[in-house]
Length: 145
Ligand code: HEC
Image (cartoon, rainbow, N blue to C red):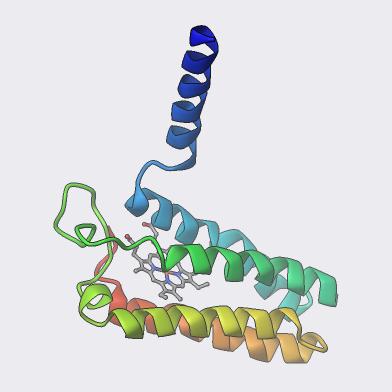
């Protein structure tokens, strides 16, 4: 019994380490992970990769899901200037509701793009998504870490 408890504890600790290095690393990993789906989305919008509604949805879904996690990864004390380098600007904390709204707009726009009717509609919707990346960075991101 004792042995079992120890093994379970060791496993739980290992799991926690693998899942999360810390909120700064996690949120940066999410942002880096946006590159793949966005590249695919641009190819679909141009027809470089044949457009299908399913492929568009598959590119947009992970963005919406991860953005939801992303905006929750900004606990106090993880702003720029701390031990771990981060591009998180002070406005994330001074204007927390604006930051959340920028995240929610991004999520809504990725969902809209993922349910576009055709390639032209998707291309238009994707422009809104790309504008959201830039708009949020402009206000809430300082120079790259
Ligand atoms: C709601 C705000 C918001 C949106 C929307 C957003 N970002 Fe970011 N992004 C940030 C913040 C804040 C950081 C800085 C994170 C840090 O360093 O802790 C960042 C950092 C990054 C980084 C650098 C990650 C690293 O440290 O290596 C990349 C790349 C990036 N974003 C790409 C994108 C792309 C592409 C999109 C759109 C598809 C996007 N972002 C949408 C807020 C946002």
